[in-house]
Length: 146
Picture 1: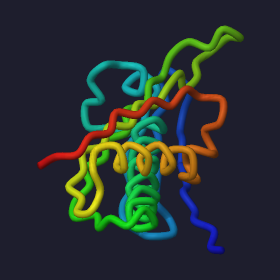
Picture 2: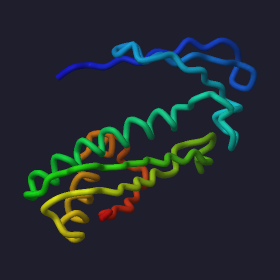
Picture 3: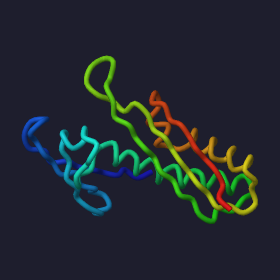
Picture 4: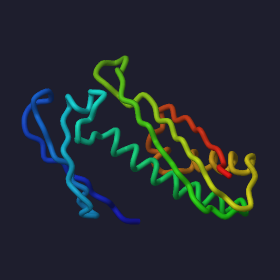
């Protein structure tokens, strides 16, 4: 199996420093990061580890769910997956990822709402990014669209 690489160049301290995170393996882009913007409600054009984890989790989950739908005898037409990753205080000090909420809306042939819900839950448990986030509460809101 392949290894994928991301890289960050950081200058300065936590509160006054800035960095650039690079999606090295794909060459898809380089994005600004800073801790004050990471901890603020408005990201103001910068990304954060939580946003990158959300992007990774939503992509991984979509792939996992499309596989589970097919295994259940359905055909995935369209899946809209959002992963909201929350940063909060760590009781042991500092901050940590306190939760992930996956919201998925699917257009699927051959599965009813119950079949889709089962496939969605199985995908959540089987997604490699979900597995990597063991110990973090991951919630799921899954529904079919007509």
